[in-house]
Length: 227
Image (cartoon, rainbow, N blue to C red; front, side, top):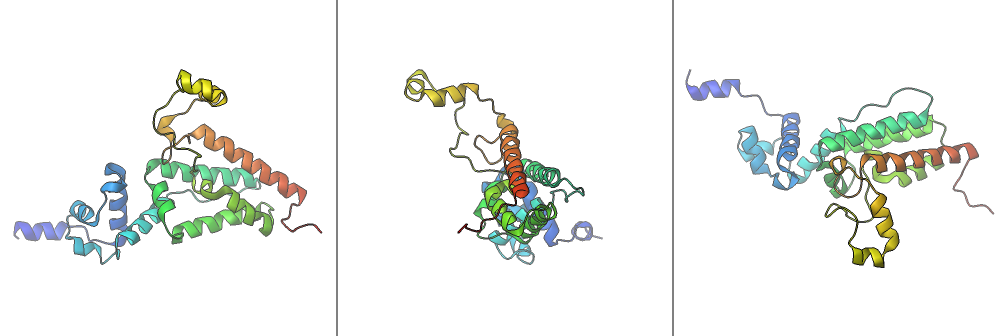
């Protein structure tokens, strides 16, 4: 057997799952900006055209990568406490995105939800409904949660640049902002997609929302306009 034949014999067959997992690993290692079909083909030791048998183009590759990451989210646990069930699932989603820092930006760039995202959102809606929230309230809850359902949030400003309190001139002009900056403590290593979005801030807002939703459920809230 020639050396070329031996290499061919031991080569792992290419399939869609292998392509997507390799793409996720490459994006983790080099950043999403460095990902290309050619670079991915090099990683897999195939010609670029071989990839197109499994993903039609770069956009389909990105969709599949999103689905791969979402597939890492833990399934919902059983139990009567819907807030605990939802909270645990969302924090599992957050852990998945922290493992893949590029994923939040790619999710936001999609023109529509991918199949795995749709399945995840459907199961989250089921958790709210199983917890006693009406379909009407669940509809508005899903809107209110937005990207938090997937473990990340958009911040008002991008604070991923310089950190620390503002200088004396800015502090004098904006004293309340300076006051808040002086009291804030953020863990830059826990950010998802940049910005002031550390774990404490995320869980703080998540718990406020979940408590508010439960309060509305108990009140029998409806969006129907009162006459």
